[in-house]
Length: 295
Image 1: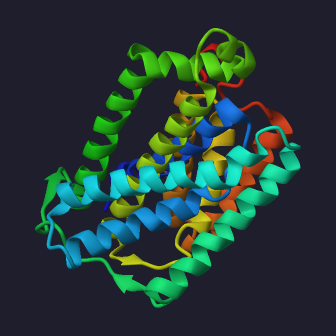
Image 2 (image 1 turned 60 degrees about the horizontal axis):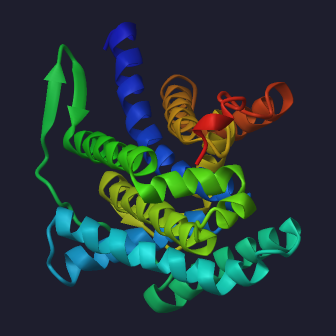
């Protein structure tokens, strides 16, 4: 394969991977935008979503779309439940207390999952025929098309919700000033709960898509993608929706190029090198000054 084709191929691979990071990063950034919490349990919500999708397909015999919907709804409810039980009682506590609680929730979800589904990795079933498009040597397989298509649809739906619905307007108002929004009649607790639900639903979809893409899931699968999605959110400007998407895509492309042209051993190192560089050079991220766009 010529160098130009290799570059384009890695670009396609990177955008596919970055789309998954973007879905997870959106949850991080939405939650941070409203309650200034870095929810480190978000990666484990993504893992739970993957398992729900797995059991929906293997045990209930559902096809991919119904399985995605089951995973999406169930995980959204789980995210809202976690918020009610773990974070709402600490609404006025110091941020460090809430951050430690998030880490505790993360460990709880991981080890509870190990107890119920065993630590053994499971093979995610093939949900679609092996298809691929070959355009002048550039190959886009069926999984990548599925990831890109579903991510695009979810981005459109999320943009519509945030920009054109009353709930989205309330989310944006709460992100600017929660107390003032409450004085204006917005139920902040309800909006925060909905935000957790939407963020968790997006993470669940990412989990199922990763299961389809890599054909394997395990109870600790949320740790590294969760951290990388956090890097993506910081890269784009945490608290800003377009920043999460752009950060996720950039991170995925960088990882693909590092894996393809240097060594896959360094792909994780590259992600965290990006975090260090961003914190040193531009701590607010790419869209850091665009505060009007945050949720």
